[in-house]
Length: 166
Image (cartoon, rainbow, N blue to C red; front, side, top):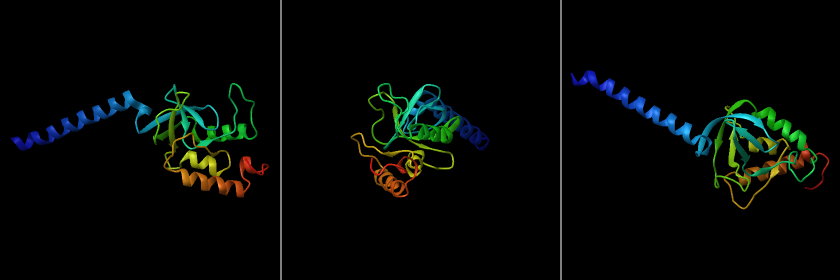
């Protein structure tokens, strides 16, 4: 008799665990260390909006400005924004935290990954749409981002095509 109840017990425990995981994801969402989210829109080359209202800033990179309230649109800014839009908009993406949770503008700081494992932070730098930026905190992929920037600069890709130094 006890053997017949064992599968039911395992099912109940599994179901409860599933409910807890789903509820915690719903509650914490993109605030977690790793989370799967829906990218609604690209705001510019290094910021996106996820799950309808969270703004996410990419760790370790910067792109030329397009929407800054006090700065003009910069060279290669529209191209960087368009590429970010192509890579992320209306897609499920993975956010990964490394270091600080938020920046001074209350945006989440994250690495962004596509379902195929591509790191968008690194991709934008490799293609010449972004460059290395460190805002006081070290980060896990710092050396890789610097190397990708050097390769993009040497290859005169993207924003490096007509600028000898940045």
